[in-house]
Length: 164
Image 1 (spheres, rainbow, N blue to C red):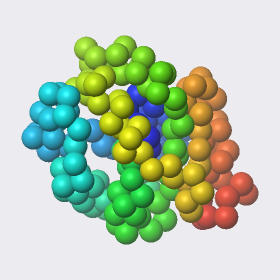
Image 2: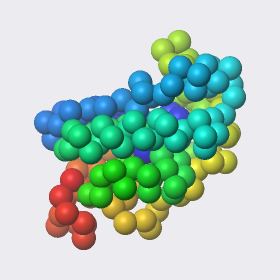
Image 3: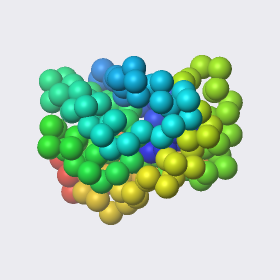
Image 4: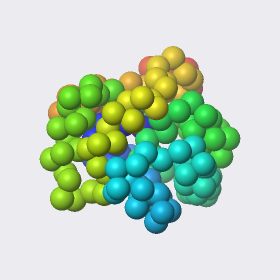
């Protein structure tokens, strides 16, 4: 979880492969109207996100175990997903704004998300640090290091929660 450009998809796919679990790309499940808003540089509202979060929550409940990439920027969004899947764990991809802007710009030809929205993502982000079931991984690490750290932090010996 985290802002645009933090590595949710790359890390999520790599974690899914390491765990031999299915991967769900959260961005693929936005409503067409929401994608159009983001392409136009308009931030989504809570109302734009509730249906998307419900769809993702239903997938989590039906397909567990699974790795899902999802921004989950607000505590209320994370809580909505937790209601659908009480054992849900989050990997917070912690990134600074400059690196996020660079990454979003670098993928502009492959993704609908506009660089103009990065500021709004940081403004919306409610840090999950300290919430139960959340581990934090620096997004500036290499992909291999991110995955290794996430797996290490998600193991029961390093966490009071149940397994990944």
